[in-house]
Image (tube, rainbow, N blue to C red; front, side):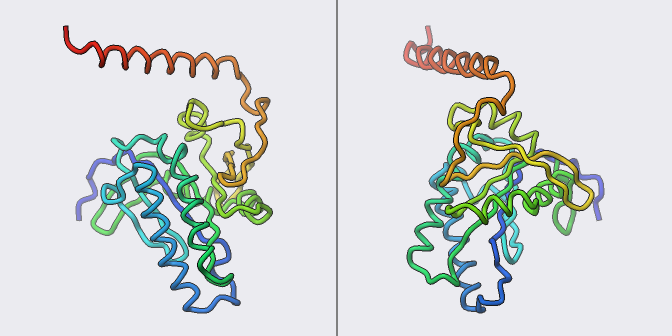
Length: 231
């Protein structure tokens, strides 16, 4: 067995079905939920521009765990995928009875992942699953009329969400996460029933606005350069 394969950076995506083990659900209910979950994920990844075939996915029984290669922009996972997934879940729920309807918790993180002959391992993967199991996320989804609760790691929020101009980071809420050995902060959003914007939670909003202005000018300059073509 090879223990010396280099770790590789991956975006880490995980989802878990709320109340999957509820005793009122039957085996046919769970089979319908699993089929619906994979259909919703396939449609959402496609709609978000994330190629499912390029990612590694693992079944978790009541959820799915996905590793995406670094060439896929992380912004897609938070700017487009959550809304696309919520839409796909609503479509599933409209055509199924209560026992087979799906509400999901979703976690996003990234880090170095090691591969061996049996699969993958990484502290970053453990961290993502601790976020997914966080009590504040479970409470947020339980009290929401929506179908999806999202939590990102502090790293993912600071590096991706905070600087994105494809979503509003002021609709995220910081929460304490205490699961097993993990003590950290996660950032929760409800994609289909968003929290009201609250700029006070982001600290230096001026710096954030300056960064977004710089990105807009950079994209504009690139468009002009593409139009002019080579000299």
